[in-house]
Structures are given as C-alpha cells and as structure tokens.
Length: 227
Ligand SMILES: *Cc1c(COP(=O)(O)O)cnc(C)c1O
Image 1: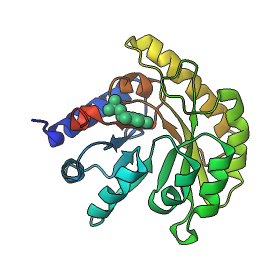
Image 2 (image 1 turned 120 degrees about the vertical axis):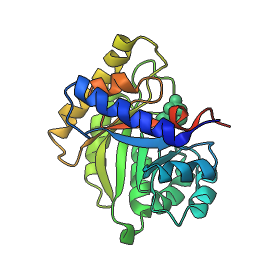
Image 3 (image 1 turned 60 degrees about the vertical axis):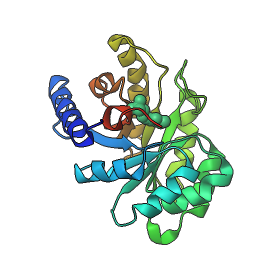
Image 4 (image 1 turned 180 degrees about the horizontal axis):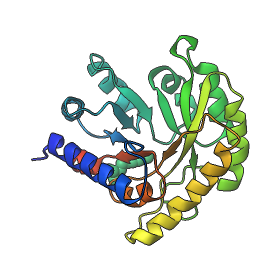
C-alpha cells in the first residue's frame, strides 16, 4: 500500500537536499502534487501531510473533486491541455493555469475570470523540440504570447512550463530544462511578475531543480500509480 505521508516527507527531503547540492536557495522549490486520476481520499492524506498545492488535468474530473474537498483551502492548478470551451470553468475554479499556449485561450481566460477572485496566475506552456505532449507554443512564439498576457488585467504572468520527452539520462534531461530556463531568464528581465519555472515530474525533477525549477509537478512518486 502507498504510504502517502511517507512519500511526501521523503520527497521534501530530496527537494531540500537537491537545493543544497545545486546551490539553490533554501525553500526556493515548491511541491505541486499532481492528483489527476487519484481519489479524493489520497488528496486529503496529502493535505494532512502538509501539501497545499494540487494539480489536475481534466476539468470534468477536477470539478467534483473540488466540491468534495471544499472544506480544505487548496490552491488548485490546472495543468492539462485546454480546449477553448472549457476556459470559463477553469477561470472560475482554479488559482493557477500552467498550460496556456495560445492567444485565444489567454484572452478567453482573461474575459471570463470573475473580478472578485483577483488575477488568475498563468504559466505559458512551451513545446520544447521532441516534447512528448503535443501541447505548447514554440520558444520563438512564446515571446508574443507573454507580451499579450502581461497586458491583460485579469491574468498574472507567472512563468513558463514544459513537459520534456521522456529521457533517462540526467545530463540530457538537464540540457532540455536549460533551454526553458534560458528563455525564462530572458523574459523575466522584461516582465517582473515572472517568478515561476514549472518543470520537473517524478522521473526528472532532480535535473529540473539543478536547472532552476521553482515548482516541481509530482504525481506518481507521491500517490503511486494512477487508476
Ligand atoms: C501527470 C502530470 C505530471 C505528473 O507526472 P508524474 O510522472 O506522475 O509525476 C506533471 N505534469 C503534468 C503536466 C502532468 O500531466
């Protein structure tokens, strides 16, 4: 049986150790628990173990889970591919979106964000060459999308996200994350609200932390295999 509290504790130990190993500041890396296709009972266990940020990929799955967990003040992150007919529910129910990859989605999220909730935190998803997922904008085109988002009052441009193609070699994993980091550093000089580099999953988060990740999105290593 998966011991979620133990997995979370050992993941935090690894993250803090990697911060030291790669000369990152203490607590500069945040843990986002990816709870897609995991039951609400496991999310509660993770909450009890101290996790406050959870990531979901499928709107139809996320909404009923949010309702069941409404007694916990969870910070919800939408990290899955987005269709434009889903943006209004996403703008209304999530605190963050990591997967904005085109102008139309940014404009719709901005128009549909309820004003009383404050700006929606947004990361632009980049499709690095050879990326496993088909989502994401090219590094070259991301400059224009970031400029658009920075000018929208109901969105707050926080950073970049990517899902690199599976790769087991640590140095090659780093190479991929380095491309994202360099683009991030370049953009962040123009947009001071950018403080988030969303990169690293169960199989590659050490390399992501080595390259400057500020938010690792971890599912399997915390919750076990998905249903
Ligand atoms: C599923 C998913 C993760 C977590 O993957 P694990 O390998 O289970 O850690 C992270 N980010 C995104 C965008 C995902 O879809």
